[in-house]
Length: 318
Image (cartoon, rainbow, N blue to C red; front, side, top):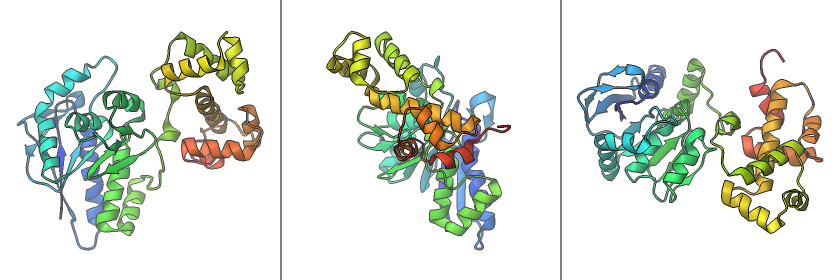
C-alpha cells in the first residue's frame, strides 16, 4: 500500500483534510486487487480544531510515503506571520518529512507552510490564484505559477485552490492504480479529470489592486478603449513612452500591452459566458482584427479555445 499522511492543524479546512482520502477510498473500491492506499490523518498535537470549529480526530505523526498539507483560512485581516509562527510544530514536521525523503504535497494555501519550512526555495510552485501574488512576494526565490493546477518540482508538490486537491489525487491514482481506475473514479465522483489550468476561474475583480493612482488611470483608459497606441496613451498622461513603460511596470509588474491583453480576455470571457455573439464579433469588440490572433491569446491565458470556454462556462438562461 501507498502510505499517505494528511497533516491536520489548527484552522485547517476539514474538507481539504478528508477530500483526498475520500477520493482514494473510491479508487480502492474500484481496484480489483483491493485497497491500495493507507491514509492517516495525523498531527504533532493531541487535539486539533479546524476551520469553522470542526474537531478532528488525529493520530500521532508516523512514517509515510506522502505527506499532504491542507490549506487554512487566509483572509485580508489575518496576521499571516503570527499564524505561521503558531504553526511551528507543523512546519518542523514538514521540514523533517522532506529531509527524510518523504514526498510533500500542499493543497491550496498550504503552500505558505511549505514555504515557511524552506521547501519552495529555488522551486516552481503554485497556490490558489487569489493568493499567488502574496506567495510570490513572500518567496522571491520561488517561481510561482498561478495558472497551474498542480506543480511538482523535485519531490515537492503544490496545488491550486481548493478543488485542485482532486486534480492531484486523480494524478496520484493514475500513477499508482492506473489510468482506468483514475478515469472511473473521476466519473463516479463527478470530478473533471482533464482540467488544464486555474486561469479560466480567475475573477479579476477579486484580485488585490496593483499600482498607484498613475497606473490605475492608465488601466482605466485601456479598459475603456480596448486598443493599444503607446504614444497616444503616453501623450494623454503627459509623459514619454519610456516613462510610461517604466512607471507602469514598476507599479504593476506588467507592461501596458500585457495588461491590455488580460483586460481584453477578461471582457471576452464575460461575452462568451453571457451572449450568443460569434467569436469573430467578440474578437472585434475587444480590439482584435484577426480572429486567429485573438484565439491564440485567449487560449494561452485561459487554457481553453474560445468555443470550448463558452461550452464549459456558459451561464444558465443565456
